[in-house]
Image: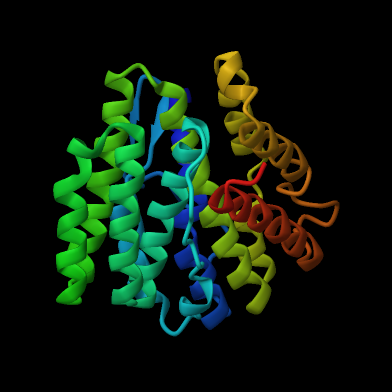
Length: 273
């Protein structure tokens, strides 16, 4: 049960985006989020999101500004493996945002990015067919298939990392994806703030878990400049991702969370620690 709780904490942010959007549209939206039925997979205590099922609910969001959440994630050079793993998580998460925006050109670019990053990680054999399927499906505007292939890419790479005994890289992929998802969510919240929506960010236990994963990593990984920056960011985020004295997270806190996550994501993309 403890492991399952850890996973549910990690997907709470993503699964609750649909509640956020509903809360914007309807006054009677639920103030709490039930994640008891969210699909989950946990392998050797490494959190493996199953985003295809979760992001399917985003079709119900209506006219959110998903185009405005897309990033210019072009990158000239890759860094060391920890940065590459974080970048992989960021790029895959951005793929789901691009699907929501129905931006075929962006999806194709992300498919090519995934191929490049997977080669740098030495796992291209695990993702090539999926990435090629993403590129092809984007030409046909087959958004459902793209979601499925993004999910399969993430699962395949996590499994390959475990086989290669690179558990810490699998964990960094998850952290990169979480940072990118939080950045996109807080951007939406900034434009459509509600106290119910802001409550989605009330997840200090999740930050504890992510920080604990980094703390257990080998010294050469957690001593990497990019990883140290991420850990510092998690430390800054922890007191913010908790309801205040009045039981809510105020808009200024959402702004601060967005600034921290956006700065970290941009530094991961730019390979600047």
